[in-house]
Image (tube, rainbow, N blue to C red; front, side):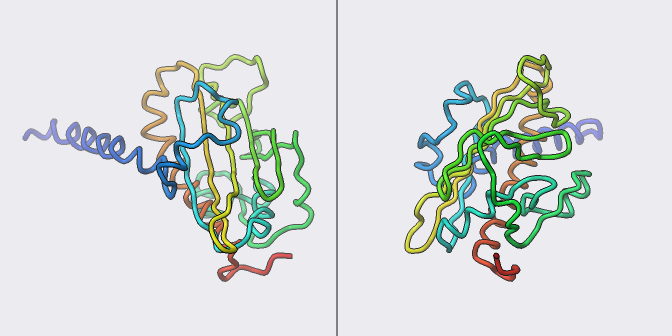
Length: 223
């Protein structure tokens, strides 16, 4: 095999591995039934071209999980994931290990910031059951876009956090993302090769971080 062909082969094999793993990564932790079931917010992006449903079982009642969801956000409690990666990306997010009383008053219409550039809006909130977020953003820059502002990188998306009974004193946390992209050719490569792996890595870390905090595995006691 020529040296010129080697990088091409590596690229093709790498892309093939990413594409082959996509179904499993898109429903990490979730059963086939959970991935297929309708959830609140599905109707907000009915034409979604990107869909994920991930889940985890938490050995704690929903009342102990909910406070960690309410305080999500940059400049708030963080997203309970990988501090080093977030700092490396320049996100400036610090993840806390305790429930903060001053952040327990989230209401419909509030913004849950992903960064200083904005974040999704709370469109539905049912304590101990559902936190539903919705946004229209520039996927290239991560900036929230006002309705009507044109952008070739516009992305409409929802982020639903659903709490369901998971057994005796346990909670099943489902997180669903649905997104619809503007028809820009860059998305053909951007989504499967960049957005999907990063989204999987950070969301899996977030689910594990919420579980550890709600179960208080080495974390400071909630107040």
